[in-house]
Every structure is written in structure tokens, then in C-alpha cells.
Image (cartoon, rainbow, N blue to C red; front, side, top):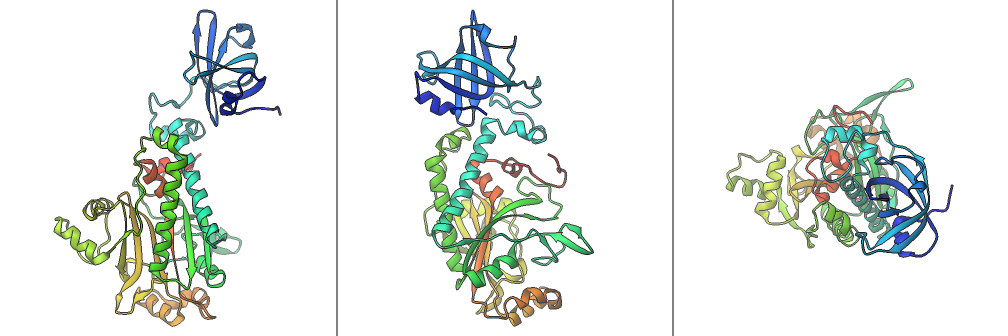
Length: 427
């Protein structure tokens, strides 16, 4: 289209004839001079227009898209120490006025309004910071695992039956058959790991639970690993290293975004993370006056309270009751009512869960019956482990959930580009 220089690069190339382009943030008239603040993906710059004939319209509105030819020069007036002196200004597209949402940080539109106009909300500095950090989380996740011998695989998103039992699936017609949106890549992770040994994936999954809370969505992105010749402790060690790698990178490379989000004090937990058994956690909460008994799940307030009582920003809850975890969780040898399962609590919220999986077909059938399920309905799953499946384990991190903690958001919808919940199907 045209040779264009990003704004942050233009600031470093003072005195050169350059073309920049972007969106009008605001304008200001001062006597016979007009100031235009222009934004692109890299930052903002002040354009100082002394020849008003250069502007091909009486007014420039917020979010008008313009192209400017000229030079960047040193300035004692502009906040950045550099201003742009135009030789030619071209309007590429006008924006309707007024804007339906406020994309400045001066006032904040309601979340529902912002989500209705999400493409405009992406231009809000806070929203841009959230997804810049989320992009970094994904990069670091893939980077660490690839560098450590894991292979990325792509599971299907349409499945023939429930991956984990239960009925919380979205059905859909599939030619002459009935199919479902995948609630988990579980079987496919395991099928890959028992051949490729160390695998990971980033994939969407769907849960049909009728949640309406600030921490749940019906469509999320999971970041999963599965590893052969591994138990629960093996993959917990991997998880803590992955999490520390991600957080260290964000503190280093996303300092400006953290500042925008008022998260400059993001803490990187030290390894190894503390291991707290489920039974110990129940006792800790009971001593604190919580009404909870062995066998109950933890509420979100209780997870936050546990973080405070344990005194760790990140820790593992391990050795769960089998009734609380999926049928494929490996039971402990010394107590079959306890399974080799764990959750990772970070920032007071569960961000990850994992287990050592059952790799012995007959034990799988036994545990299915233990959970009140019919093994005959899972024969295609069980058969995958009848041809030399090694012990294996894995875990799953919710991308939006970890983004929520790192960015300090209180509603997970802020951390999904186009969230899907019980009420929202658009945009």
C-alpha cells in the first residue's frame, strides 16, 4: 500500500522524511496551530500542524485513520521529547462520531457495553495491555515446552462422546450422527503421549454448565501438557517451572503493560512450590472456622483464604478424594479413595489441575464402576491403553484464568477477546 514507519521507530529517526499512519487520539487547536495526537500499535506521537491547509477536512474526529508524511524532530514542548512536522496529511477513513464506548483511560464504559463494541475496546490502553500480556503468556508457554522436548499436537474439537463423563456438553448434528463440542482434549492428550512421550497443546474447549460467575466462561482456551513415564509429582515439577518462566518473562518484557494495569508488583513465586494435601487443607480451613468437611470441594473464597493461611502466592493442593476427580485419576496404592491429583492455586484462584492417569485397562474399568459409570460406554477410550501404554500424567492451565490473575482483573470476561457465556454469542 505504502511504505510506513511505526511511530516508535519514527521517534528515533529524527530529520528523515518518513510516512506514519494510525488513529487520531485527540486534537487541540492553539491559535493558528493544530495539534494531533496519533496512535499506532507501538505508541503515540504529537503532530504539530502549522499549515492548516494540510488538513483535508474542517475537523478531525477521534479514531479517524490518517496517513502523514513529514519529519520527526526534537521538541521541548511535546511530552515524548519528539514531535512530527507534517508535509502532507491524508485521511484514509473517517470514524462515526460520537464513539459508542470511551476508549481512553479517563472514564470507563460498562463492561457489557465494551464487550458489545469489542473491536473499539481493543484500542483502550488497558485492554491492549491485557492482551499483550496474554500473547506473551502463550509465547512463553510454547517456548518453554518446545525448548524442553515437548511436541505440540492439535486435538479435534468435535467429539463423539463425553471426555470426562457427565452431561455438561454442547450437542450438535454431525451428518447422520450426534456429536459434541469437546469439553476436554483428555483422550487425545493421552493417545499422543503414549506414543510421542511429551506433548502439549493450546486448544479451545466448551463446558455447558450454567455458570454465571466472574471466574467462569463456557468457552475457554486450555494450555495442556501430557507426559509419558511420569507421575503426578513429575508434572507438578514441570508446571512450576513453566509458570515461573512465564511470570519472569512478563515482568521483564511487559513492564509498561503491568504499569498501565497497576500490577508493577507482580510477584514471581519461588520453586519448589509448597505441596499441601487435600486433607491438610480441610484441617487448615476448619481451624480457621470454615464450615467444610472432608469430601467437599473448595469454594473460590476458600481458595483465596487458603492462600492467605498457607502464606504462599502459589502452591499445590494434592492427593484429592477420588469422588472429586475424574475417573481416569490414578488411585494411591495405600488408599484407593485418594487419587494422585492436584490443583495449582496462584493468586488465590485455581489456575491448573492435573493428575497421574490410569494406564491399565482393567483398573480403568474398575474406577469407572467406582464413579457409577458404565465401562461399556468408554471401551474406545479404554482400548487405547491395551497396547503398551506407559504410566503418564498431565495438567491443564486455563489461559483466561491465568491472564486474569496476572493482569489483576476481577472478571474473566476482560481476559477473553470474544467471551462466550450463557448470555453472550456476539460479537
